[in-house]
Image (cartoon, rainbow, N blue to C red; front, side):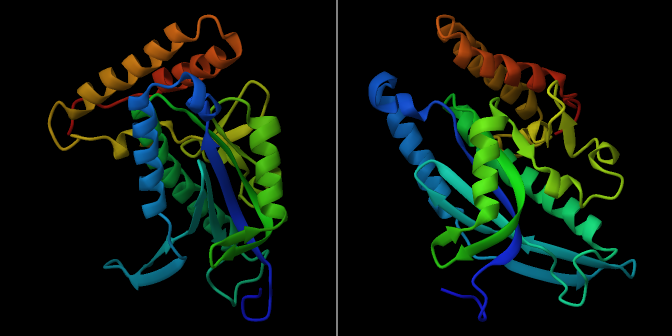
Length: 257
């Protein structure tokens, strides 16, 4: 199968899934199973084909928007973006760092929405963002970029974070340290996407004055509940402890809607 005569393209590839779903058949209540099935149904609806669009802005600039290619299978999600939207731009051209930044920001947007849905039923997410050869389309996804992202998710990420590969970080001007709002560095020196502040964007009732306060109380209750339930399972509990530290480190502005 080929796209315009070429089977594989160079694409940014985000792969992530939910932690703890292996216990679904033995340790979950019927209510939680139904909630998870409803979540999977929501994921099916976010599937879409890539769409890139642009329009001039009032200040004389130009705004580019992109809807990524998204595939879901079981509780796994693959999101991919092209190397660059402008065919005239070289792979090492001056706009590539800006495009890489834009892609990373959109990955945070996608992850934030899906992660918040998972939190509602007590599930965390883990994944990775890589770059390389990939075929993604027509209900199929295949290539080295997906293999690398899967490897990073399963063997490197460990905690509920989205690890970013060196082949993505190397495309950024100034490296990840120049983008503290996008990337965080962990104790193992690995960089990961800072999706935590965007979790609130997928919450319910945020349009109300006290929406954020109520949402923060709800999420913290979910965290505390899982920490308490996993006292006898230190490896699983450690993931919630890690997420708890990251969640508490965010400065939430509760003075605005």
